[in-house]
Image 1 (tube, one colour):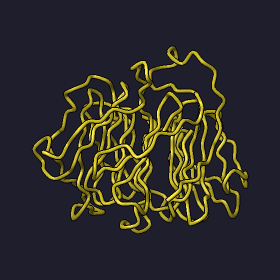
Image 2: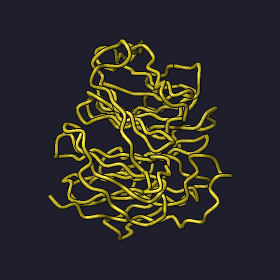
Image 3: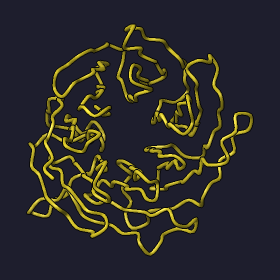
Length: 309
């Protein structure tokens, strides 16, 4: 289940493997729609519209008219990212697991652009204009520069060298770009995160570092599943993991501010509201290590945590 907050109120959309996409005002369900098959990704297009990504289709849900339009179908690979980047006007950028990146304007029936950055499967992706970060199998992270290369007729992204997280072999569990697009956080399956600064095209920078999280007192580790940057506190972010705990961190001082215990249910996704006063948590079964490893039943639900200054 994933969620995105919107506007100053804690209004968010949540999607689930059972195909239900709900619109909530805090924990009050305001609207929902059932899509046949798992709803994998959801992203606001504007105040009144959502994009929903499924296994081989992408839909646009008009909340005012309560109408759903299929904008992409018979995809050869499932969507792994949907991004509404205000700097690109009416364009929404989509990424597929096979490395295809394309843009759509809801007013035009065809794709505005499409290009494939193939080779290996994309596991995780995030974007803050003008950067997009792609996480591939083998812990390889690829940085794409969208600035000055975004042309309707000839999309040709500038591309940095591949950066390999060589210290650990676990596949990436998430990628999160900072609000100013100067760094990103990569989650790893062994209870660690890596912070990479986008200062150079030549591998690691002196400011890059790893830190431990999602660890228990007996030194057992759990996958780190999600991350969210605080919208107003510079350098502050939160991480959540498969042990049901989440922590607040300060990037500038490289220290943990506080550790929170919610439950034993894995935290799959998190997002601050616009003011940073509340943190929305999506909880449910953790399949990051495969369905066979998820042996404990966890009920899928949404929770809200109030954040003190």
